[in-house]
Length: 300
Image (cartoon, rainbow, N blue to C red; front, side, top):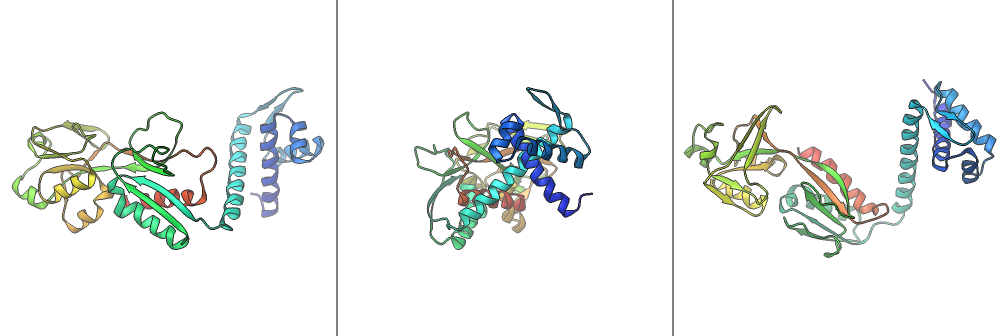
C-alpha cells in the first residue's frame, strides 16, 4: 500500500513513462520534458521498483512493453488525459460559456431529458442562447449548422464523431381501455392485436430473459411517424405499442399505460451524441453530454 507521498511520486513517474512511450526513446523524452536522459531513465526505474515489476524490455534501438507494462501504459495515458481535461476545464471555467448552441434530438427526448438539462445550463450560464430542434428526422450537422445531434440506432459511417450516451430498453404497453376490450393477451395471440408502429418497426421483436424470443406483426396496425404520437395513440386505446420505457415513465406511474407481457423486452437501441468537432468539445457541450448520460441512467 502506497502512502500519499509515494502516490504523488508515482503519478509523475507514470507521466514520464507515458512520454517515453510517446516519443519512442529516453533521449527524445528527455528533450520533450526538459530533463537529462539519465534522469528520465531514473524515473522509469523508480516506477518499476515501486511497483515491483519490469515494465520495459530495453534494447539499444527499441522499447518493448511487458504485459504489465502494457497495463501501466494504458493507465499512464488515462492519467495524462485526466490531467489535461482538468486543466482545460479550469481554464475554460474562467470564461463562462455564452452564445449559440444548436442541438437536435428526437421528439420523445424533449420533455424528460433534453429540455430540463438545457434549462439547468441556462440557469448556470445566463448568456447561453440555445436553439433546439426536435424532430425524428436525422438532420445533417453541417448543413443545418448544428453543434450536436442526439441520434438513436446504428450510425452511418461518416467524418462525424459519435459518443455513446446509453441504451433504450423498450417495453410493450397499452391503455387500460384497450386491455379491457382485449383480455387474455398472450404470446400466441399477439399477431391478432392492433399494433401502433413507428417507421423503423416493420415487426415487433421481444426477448424474455435473453432466451425466449418472439417476432410478430399484425394486419391491424396504425403507423405513426414519432414516438410521441405513438405514445398518445396508445393512451387513447388505439392499440399496443413497443416504446422505450424512459419515455413513458410518468404514464406507467399514473396508470395511463400498462405493461403487456412484462417479462418481455424489445431489442435495445443505442443512443449517441453526434458532433463534427475535430478537437475537444467545448465545455458547454461536454457538460450537456455528461448531464444527459446521468439523467439517462436516472430515468431508466
